[in-house]
Length: 290
Image 1 (cartoon, helix red, strand yellow):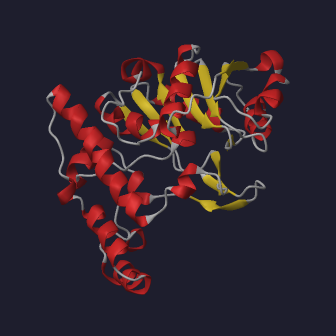
Image 2 (cartoon, rainbow, N blue to C red):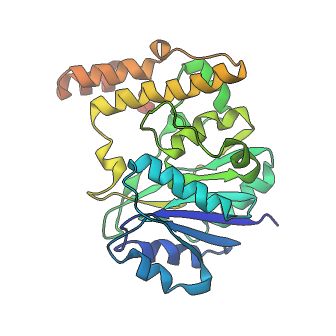
Image 3 (cartoon, one colour):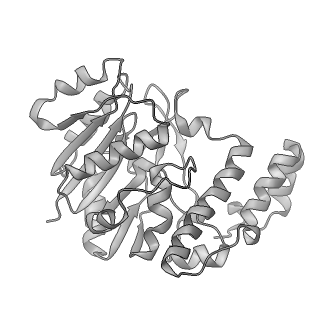
């Protein structure tokens, strides 16, 4: 049976961290280990975590004023260094796992042992834990992610942090991350976009994670139209940098039709964009395009 590790990164998640850890302890298949890295919380998060005693491994970090994406990378890297599992789950401290997540992901990993990444959509919940929809994106549900990257000149085929589980073999090659490009991209993106070069990306159709949507969420703040364009360009830059280092073919963002859709959305009024997307744009998932 595959050993599993859950790496929880948290900072000032006192209202949610109990639910987060409890969801791991209530799994139909318990993780082999739960490692929580706290980045110097000042709101009582650490006190709550200490109450779990030996049921978790708690790493109490110190707040250093690093940018959030660097702090998160450090948290994940420190937690990974303390872990031993062959299938490694990532989890933000304000999210939570559904009861059968580890069981289902581990089964998928056993069925596809060449997987570098197992992922699935997430169910969105509000600050009170109430369901408010899913983040299913049909374009991410593909069989061959590397082929899709080159066919569409796009690398955005991956779900956010708490949806992801990586093989230990892959993380040992990919970590620590190199931030010398000074791009404010998060760890999930940097790990995901190059994962298809190391093995299979296994997609599960159903949601096994509750993704918290609240005012302090970084992903909420990242929804601005201008930032989405910059993120598309930055993702491509990170992918291409990796390809150049290893002699692989690069992609062109200017052949990415989704980038042009983002540009149209940024430039035109909402009613015009909505008409274009609903009636004209061939990539609209409602038209059945994959």
